[in-house]
Image: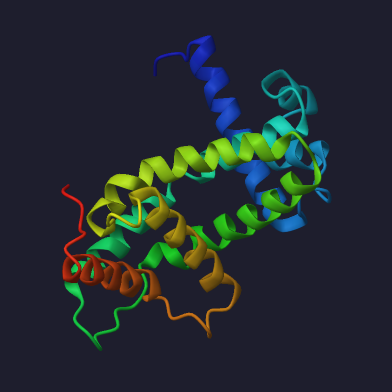
Length: 196
């Protein structure tokens, strides 16, 4: 087996720390999580944490940035459901909504609370979310109208997913798909659907 380069080894350590921090932050909250506990979870030293991240804030932003990537696949699945479903045909939620999304939702709420209380973290969080919405915009594009930008549609999908995790009984798991379908119908009826 080929030996890892320094850069590859550092990237692997960073990934381990981010994955461990995500689990600890989801379990204990940002304030309840200690750098020692994160290092233990990653089976690394506290020094490894600080050689990769200047502070717990930097580590938390690394976690947020990493955790915003996988949900794009969830929204692709929901978009496919919106295209396949007919009225009254309620599909079950994608499988990922049950496992990854639970930790993802906990982290999003945790980090927004932390960001709102600790300037200048909100600016960095907002930048990460702008980037996330831009990544989702191609998926949301077919549902945009002259009145609703693709990135706004993506923002609605994110918010609905968070609400579904908070109160699954009040918001059916196919809600994002139904909202996207309604936007598409509304835009088409009013002649305001954007060209892809």
